[in-house]
Image (tube, one colour):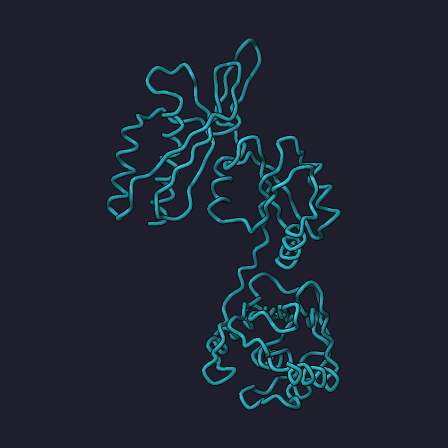
Length: 351
């Protein structure tokens, strides 16, 4: 792709645009330089600009902090030999660009997608309206949509002995822009924890994910996995977070159950409602898994319950406390009641 790269260099020299390449992406702006639209859209040797609209004038300075949320668009289905000399004038034509990021391969081609961040949500909305399915080349229409701006990661496979302070200290060494860290008992592994990491921006979270995937988080345990936080897992963790719902007195000491207590409902009744809802929407019979993860001397036990519908979505899981001396239902059945009610709630919202 020698011609495309030479055209890009000629465009940079002509316009004075500075592009910074780091960690698999090349970035322009943030804030935009004082460059006029006439300079940006003047044309590039070896690259046709017949389909690129003329650019408006860019202000000479930027006042205030970065643009608010809801100002970034995601661009995909880019030809791999298209670069900023074509893309920036095109996306600048519909509004004021604050930043443009093009993802690159090791060989220097683009990876087929990019991000454009505008000065206002109105500019971003205009970009989607004007440029979604825009034909960069004959038969090669691009996709332009809202960027999800994900900022939360989940780290699985942490040892049970890992403390929040230790994890925060380790993360601050290898990542930047961390906003908060929360630890949870893992619903997937016994004797393991998972952590939810929230970063100040999508860019910081994406860079942290890349860094952590390279094995830079060392907490004395192999098999640590890092990924974007799934909305369903986030909801499960919120439902199971520490939130005292019940308490009692024993020996003059107040003991609080730190998570939801299994409701006193017959399992068969709850299962009947769940299975009826599944059959109504053509879903298969739910499958339950339960596991005792903690035993208290006062008779209360903490159970993990996972419910899955074969062929439908991802399993849902929750934690609940059950009382071992209840005669009407076994401990496992009490945990299944909590899991079934949780799945019922999610299905009613989704369906």
